[in-house]
Image 1 (cartoon, rainbow, N blue to C red):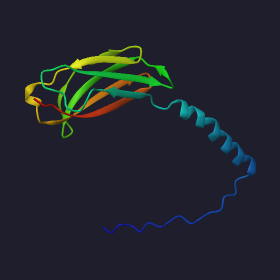
Image 2: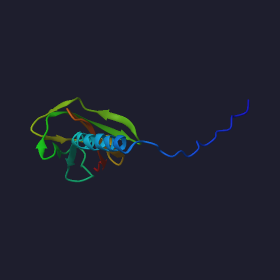
Image 3: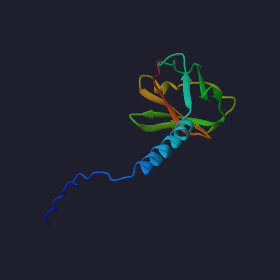
Image 4: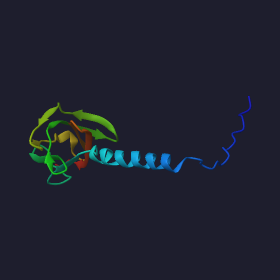
Length: 137
């Protein structure tokens, strides 16, 4: 069965009234601040390096804020290898905009490039933070 020919729509001149156009522009302008106010929050990871030493504490700090205000919510982290999840940790509470932990990478992880991914959930949505790591001996 042949594919029907698709025609481009003919260019048409707008015959909208100037008052109607002004109302449309005003309506769009009124929605712009609301859209900007609904912008996502910021989640940041601080870690000492990208090469944690196996079986030793590797401290992390996750900070979450929006417009200078610290947020509450929850987070979890996963370990990915070439995009596939190879390890995950349960959900943890986030209070006062800060989460701190010390992780220990097992010896089996040495030399394998991983993505340490943090999923943060707040009332403003979900954000992901990725951090490339390769554990060393």
